[in-house]
Image (tube, rainbow, N blue to C red; front, side):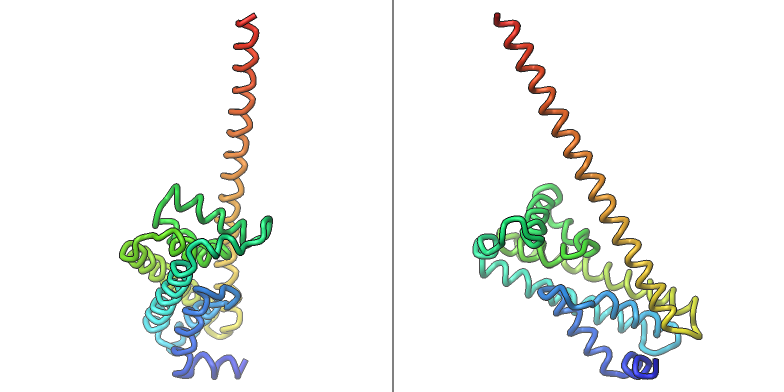
Length: 217
């Protein structure tokens, strides 16, 4: 507990937050959201400053997204060719391509709340040559909304458990996981509905073919 207090209230925390948020853009195993939430929890007690937590998290995320975008842009088709069929990464990239076709740049904002979605989307946007200026606009919206969301989640937990920051961190992370679960649940239901509609369409097509065949006799 004392070590965590010292780390989060140190001025170096701001630099660490920026670096971790940036790394998370192209190395998604880094837990940047948990760090933003933790900063928000401790901000409820006065240190660190909430606005600095939000700003540095947003700038770091914006930077990381552009690194990932440039990696995708430089690799073009090599990223897709290097994916193993049936792997989670291949599935994530396939999802990113479908969502880009449906929603365009807005998917970058949505992907912020999908596990593994952010990196897949930014790499894909670079690989398909999404316009840099448009990418920067959507990346800015995504980074700011995500940083505000994480910082405020932590701040709420910090206010609720001012005397026990660890409980505040647990509450903040729990709320974030709940939001992720809701997003994933919505995606699952949508996929099921889409699959059901596709099956119904296929069955309808078969019936039409049979009727056509009978009418020709």
